[in-house]
Length: 245
View 1 (cartoon, one colour):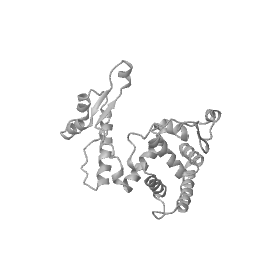
View 2 (cartoon, one colour):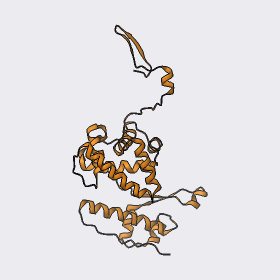
View 3 (cartoon, helix red, strand yellow):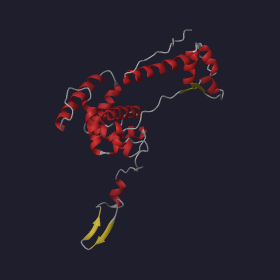
View 4 (tube, helix red, strand yellow):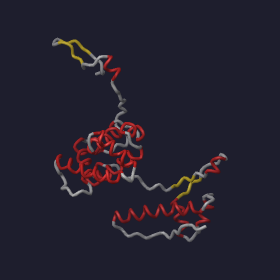
C-alpha cells in the first residue's frame, strides 16, 4: 500500500489517513532492504534485544538477564561514567548528546543496528542521522558483534581474516603519478624468519623506507599475539626490532 491511498469498500473508505499535503511535509527514507552482510542475530528482534542488554551490562555489577528496570539503572551508571570522561574527550560529549536525543542507551544502540543492518545504510549516513562520527558507528557495531558472538556463536558472521597485504602510498610517488607499493606480509614474515634484514625486505617490495616494513611486521605481531591469547595457545614471537636511523 502506498503512503497516500484510499479504496472505497462497503464499510466506507479504506485509507491510511494521510493526504498528499501531509506526505509532502513528512520525512521519508528509502528502504534498501537488508544489508548483504547483516549478521543473522540482527534479523531477530529477541536476539537483538539480548545483545543490546548484554552490551549495556558488560563490565557492570549486574546479574545477567536483568529486567528492564535493572538495565535502565545500569544505563544511568554508564552515562555517569561517560559524563566524567566527557570532561577530557569532546567525542564522548557528542555521544552523550546523541544518547539523550535517542531517549536512552538502548534506543541509541537499537537505532544504529536498525539503520545499519535493516535499512542497509552506510556509516556516514547513519552518523548523519544519529549526529555522531562515522567511526563511532563502526566502533559500536564491532562491539555489538563481539558481544553477539559470545551469546549466539552460530548466528554471527565469521571474523574478517587478517589482511596479508599492506598498501603503501608514498606521497612523492603519488604526486609524480607512480603506483602505490604493496607489501605482502606473509612473504615479509618468511624473509624475516630466514634472517633477511629490513632493508633487504624493503628493497624486495620497492619501498624506500625500511621503517615502513618494521611497522607492518610489528602490527602483524601484535595481532598474532592477541589472537594466541584469545585462543589460549602458545605464542612464538617473530624477532622484529624497530628500525633505527
